[in-house]
Image (cartoon, rainbow, N blue to C red):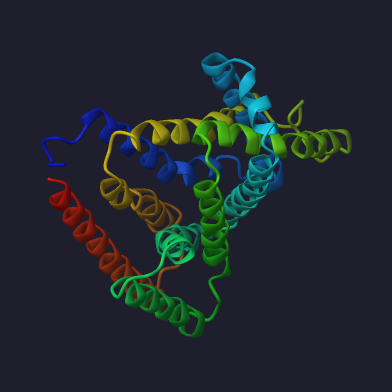
Length: 296
């Protein structure tokens, strides 16, 4: 597909999804006074309601029953729900604990981890993984701490992506089931927090905080719905490059807005990992172009 043949609407919607994901640290930072676990629980509750309403409007009541009729698929989505719930919780905690830069590193690493988990690496991808591993080791031994937040985010999201790749289900339906799995524990936790005086949704927090918590559900669902629309209209090679928009924005927000530490040793580690990503991206473009020529 040539540049002229790219679906402009699909491109703009994909870009919007990645930009929204990239701006998430600013949004969650507005909720810094709310405990991270409660933010995640509210995110699950309000996202569940929004996605269920969307699916009810599009497909009626049968979407959930159809999943339950397939126990293996339901079990896979339950597992992916646990993975994404852990990912959301760690990410929100990391943002509000001052680890936005390290969180962005996790999402830079994620594409490499996805390939490592789900495909046989070719002779270019192996060096990419090795270079990225060298960058992680550099950060560990020269910056003075193991980047566990980045690797835990990459691993949880990578495992989530692998399960979703194996689970033959529409992305929005999958999100609906995942949120349904998390909904009852999230509601139970919020009820306990409110009744024990540790919550504040019904009075202690102001209406602005309550509104941000509710709208957080929309910010969870809308980019994914937009992404599921765009991925059917834009080549995967293009999507593969666009996915770096979000962690790049998160990185810049961490350094320029939140003024997180980014000294020489940390910069060297990041540059090494970015070199690995550049090798990986160029190889992906080259293979995509070769496949396009082969189909012509």
